[in-house]
Image (cartoon, rainbow, N blue to C red):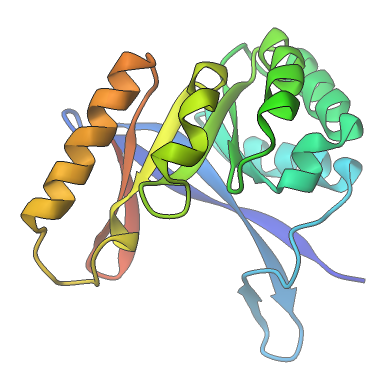
Length: 199
C-alpha cells in the first residue's frame, strides 16, 4: 500500500515576511530509497485526502492552508462533499484554499465553485503565466479567489529577472487586481522555494 504525507511550505507576506498560510505538498514514501518523493499519482481517494489534511493541520500553529486538486478530483462531487464537511467542522471560513493545477471546463467551474465557496473554501489557479495562460482562464477569473504566478517557471535558478518577465508579472498583477484576486508570487531563492504574497 502506498504511503502519503503532506509537507508544509510557508507562504510569506512580502512586506512583513510573516507566514500567512502554508501550501501542503503531497509526498509519497519511497521504501527502496527510504525518502519522501513527489507521488507517481496524485489521484488519492477523498477519505485519504481528508485524513492527510487533518494530520498536517494538527502539526501547524497556523491553520490557513492550501492543497492541490487534480481536475478529476475537483470535478468529483465526493471530494467537494468531503472537503466541505471537513472545513465546516474543523476550520474557519477562508482557512482552506483549493488550488487547481489544471483548469476545469468553465461550466464545471461555474457549477462546482458555488459549493466550495458556500463552505468557505477559497479557489486558486496555480502557475498562471506559464501553465495556465490568460486566454485559457480569463472567463474563469470571477470564480476563483487567487491566481499564483510561478516566477520559477519563467527563468532558471540564479538568472536575473528580465524586462519581459517584469512585464508579464505586471500584466498578471493588473488582471488579479481587476478580478479582486490575490496574486502570490512563487519564486526560487537559493535551493528553497518560497511563495510571497504580493497583493
